[in-house]
Amino acid sequence: MHDQLGGGFHRYSVDDRWFVPHFEKMLYDQAQLAISYLEAFQITGDPQYADTARRTLDYVLRDMTATGFYSAEDADSATDPARPEVKSEGAFYVWTAGEIAALVGEPAAPGSATATAWKTAATWKTTRTTSSPAGISSIKPIPWRRRPAISASRWMR
Image 1 (tube, rainbow, N blue to C red):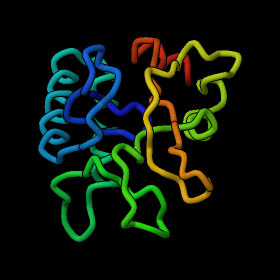
Image 2 (cartoon, helix red, strand yellow):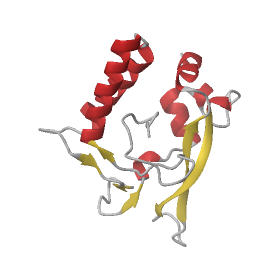
Image 3 (cartoon, one colour):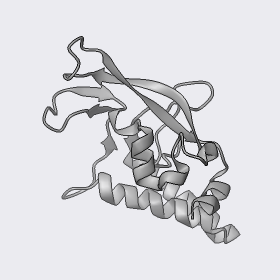
Image 4 (cartoon, rainbow, N blue to C red):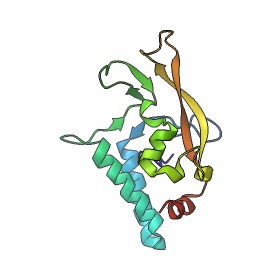
């Protein structure tokens, strides 16, 4: 499953509609998919394939390297940098409407006048919060793009 906001690809979906990803990303998946997208670009000349390969490799360089390459990004993510021992599955990959607006621009954010590009596919319970006296879990949406990739990319330019 392509992570349209964070880049790269999740390994697979955990629901039958392919809305909720398994929140793990593997280095070998990124490499194989980048090669496939580059070969698709070479065959078709369609720049959408080259863009996907470039974004995938940008994700790898940004999030999967240190002095070498990480083999994977774990599904269990720290929810608070001050408390890295507190983890929750998918914490890196759920977004508020404000976070989407900051990343891709207000026109593509849910709740905006042109919200046809994004829709909440599901909600995900991230973790118990320390700010809540009752310890109520925080809920964030998992966004998915309604429009086809090429249509949305032209629309968001």
